[in-house]
Length: 487
Ligand code: 2AM
Image (cartoon, rainbow, N blue to C red; front, side, top):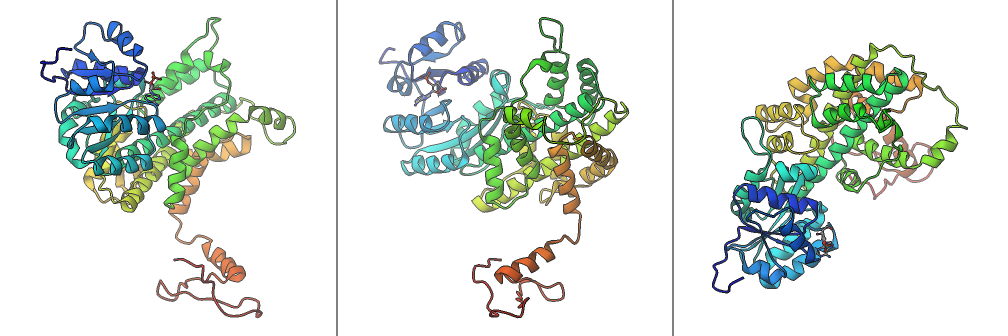
């Protein structure tokens, strides 16, 4: 590089794994000049000579050289491995940057790490963004969903880059908008991934019912999913499921039948469940989806148990007319899952002091990402109608949709129970739906038990809320109530 050249790059991207490379090429397509850097420097030249050949992308062989090429305020996006690599890269960058420069973490970071890094970087006078990026390699190349949060003052400086490269919905609106303060961007991405776990588990349960109870062939199932994809279930995951089921191995047999049934996971589903427990939100469907992957990983134990534990076994003789009800169960349970996800978002916003735009989040997920679907357009409409909507299930459209689907949903859950097919997600969704609409739950008895053995006190239905009573149930011991009780 000649020393006299004015810095001319719009943004730097550190990390040339496939997501980083594809985001760079996407930015280049939209007219931004990108400087690429990678810890293992040989990858910079590999990239420039191959994937980025013939583009305006420039490379750097050191972080210093990279920084020197950037216009101010400098924008540096990290696409490195989540965890320590992010902290190390920030440490390298800080001495080279000036107040007002912006560090963006586009990896799958845990939101609490993002909150910590934001504080650290802001203390040095710089700005920080934690941005969730979803859509996989293909999305990164052609239009991902981007969920940025962090220092509000940074947003105007990255808005045009992010919104240009993001996926667009039919009317051209980008699937990227400001999510909120602190770690809100990575939190919303985490919920996205949790919801993705739930959607995939529900599809898996529908598949197992069609396969084992109705005895359908892979081609027949592919046709069922293709049909579903024309209606209210229209989504990327339903579409690829149809394509996967139709895919044949080299011997002409469905490839899906040859894939070992043990699921992997990287952690964002688990984080969602941990956060739900932390915030006291019953995100039961995503939890079941995470645990279903755990059970699937016990392949050897399941094989042994299948020979010991008694119970009905599906025999493929179910009536094919049940396929419609399975679609209804999938749809109704999916509504519950998103309602639960939004409950968690609301609780997190309250707890962490973020000002979240719930309809905007649905719009960001409407295109580009793995959970993209027609359904998210309906969620956006629900929050447009009532931005303060307490629970998605209470929106008139979704209340009617669950009511309309529930006969099929109940039939499917009951049938699964009677035929021995595990449907943890469909059934926990139904249990949640029934609990949420039940005026009197058995927690009165539970409170009595807690008061009996631990003097934890209880409230009464015939007294104002907030007054606590203790009964000496056995006539023995003192009348003191437990001091550990917290309302
Ligand atoms: P590498 O090619 O030098 O391994 C995904 O692993 C990306 O994160 C890669 O670009 C990788 O760089 C980068 N990465 C992993 N650990 C890193 C670290 N400690 N510092 C900088 N980059 C790192």
